[in-house]
Length: 389
Image (cartoon, rainbow, N blue to C red; front, side, top):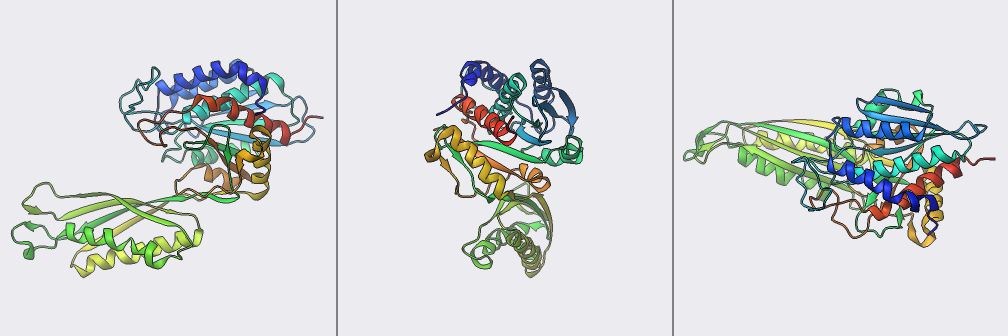
C-alpha cells in the first residue's frame, strides 16, 4: 500500500492528537476545546489563514500551494463533535467526561485532516488552494449548514468539496464509495395525540391515547410495506412513546417521536404525505385528535459523478484497485455533509476501520491504523486535483 512515507513518521504524533480529542469529547456546537486545539495546530503548521467561529465553533484553514496558476480551490471536511453516550471501552485514553464519548470516530477524522494539513503546509506541492474545514455539530445539529450560512463556500472560494468517514467492519486499507445517493435523508417527526383521560377501570368513559398511539405505530409501517416500490428504500421508525404516569389512569395525551430515512426525493415526498394522512385519520377513527410535526432535516447525501470517479481513482492509488469498492450499498444513516454537496460538487467516501464495534456503540473506538491511510488520501487528492507544474 503506497502510504506517503512522511505519515509513517507522523503517525505516532497524529495518534496522540486523536487520543487527546477522544479523552475530551464535546457535543454539537459546544466544541470549544477541540476547535481551539485545531486552530492552535494549524497556526503551528504555518497555514496561510485561519478562521474560527464559522458556524459558531467551526474552524477553517487555508493552505496555498507553491503556485496558483490553476486558480483551483478544494475543500476537505472533517467533523469534530461527539455523542451523548457513556463509554465502555476501558481504554487509557477513554472519555474523561461522563455521558459523552467519541462513538463515531470524529476524533479520528479531525486528527487525520490535521495530519494532512501539516504535510500540505510543509510541502505545498500543489498548484492552487486547499481549504481544510473542521465542522461542529454533525450529530444532529446541522453544523455543515451553519457553516455554509456563515459564508463558508463563498468566503473561501471553494469550488469542490470532499468528505470522509470511517467504516467499521471493513478492513483498514479499503475504501468504499458510489455515485449518487450514498446516505439517506434523515427527517424527524413528532406526533401529539389528544384524547380523553379517565379511570383505567372505566375505559369506555374516555378516549385512550395509548391505544391510538399503538395503532399509529403499526399503521405507519404500511408506508414501507404497501405504499413504496419494493425496489426503493424507506425507513419509518417511531422511537419514543411518552404517555401517562401511573397504572390506574388512562392518559389524556401521548407524544410519539421518530425518524424517516429515504434515498430518493420522490419517496421522501411520499413518506411525508402518507404520514400526514395516516396519523390524523387513525386518531379521528378512535375519537381522538393527532397533530404531526414533520421536519425535513438532513438531505440525501448525493455524490457527484465526476468527483466520485476522481475520488475513487485517488483511493486506488492509495489502496490498490482490489481494495476500492465503487458500488458500496447506500446506508440509511444520515450525514450533514449532504448540505455541502448541495452547494458544491464533491464526493463522500468511506474508509475501512477494521474489526471494531459499530458506530454509535459505547464500545466503539476509532482504529489508529487508519490514520496514515486517511492522511495519504487527503494529500494525494489535493496534489492530484491541483497538480504542480
